[in-house]
Image (tube, rainbow, N blue to C red):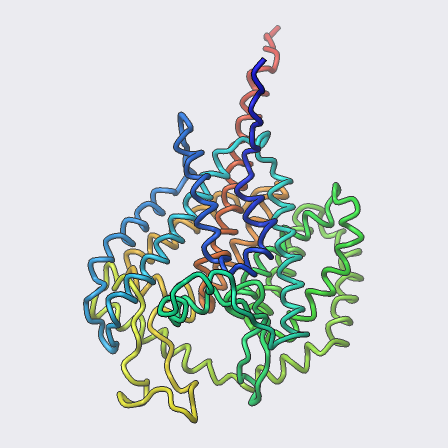
Length: 452
């Protein structure tokens, strides 16, 4: 009898991607392993007889079409900016295009794979595990902020490519970014991601899955182990100086209170109050109030961020209002002077490029007002579709979506955060569709009642 081939589980690309993440970081391929994982997921979709899409997906397809059309503007001069070398422009445009393709694939993959083949609990546990990895990576950034090393990918690539400034940030493992935020050099955790803000965005997106998977009914031993992990995570959260992360954690706490009251009524306040008191006391006894005070006293980036956002919109409206410029652009000089910019004595005087300092501004500048409208419409439609749901997985997915809509103002979420959000949307959509199918089956199987 011929040996029967072993059938791989449907979710193996996600398992390999997330379970091996510490190894991918050491190898220097954390940014690219998402693209590799998307290949077998795309093949699985192609192999299916039918592939369905969630309601509102047409808005997303329209946005992707604008992304492609915007490539025609890559060499076009944008107002107030300098057009960089075509090679670098094509590299970063292609990189972002790969990300948009990968997040689209994972949305359809999760949503089209049956829950018997890819259980929701398995996906939740994988993303909860990523919270653990991110928390300990952040702690490493606090304890060993100067740790960095040459990755395997750096050793394999030719020097001109490996030392490219854009690629260097993606493939060179380091535990922290050393930045002068409070008037002195301060480490901001980033491991196992490329930037400190990416670390904060990813930690917040993984948190709802961690809380559900490690403190839910079926958590088992994870419920005990979850508390030390939260303590570990709190250390880099405090020292990250990450205002966006602090803000969404507060919003997340308020969201959790609202959902508990919605599900269990105002009687839940009786046991929510002690939890809130303990959380507030713990926060007050930690270095967090001091760090927040110092961070608020050193908000030198606020004016630059707001002016960059306004100039981003102005440049887009004047130069290419519909489809944008396809890629980011360096600002011409500084906002104060055309001759301004970074100097040896003040490297921070340089203005960040147009299309940075927030995913929303990236979309505005690179895909224009039309692309921005389509981009936001998709996520708002998905939010409206699920906002009344009482399904636990949908409620934690809504938390991630709310975090996303806040963080796109200050973080570049195109990457692992958007990938996680698309997984959440896929789970929400699949859960909603399965619930509708179950209700239809119940109606069909219900006995007919004849009138007397």
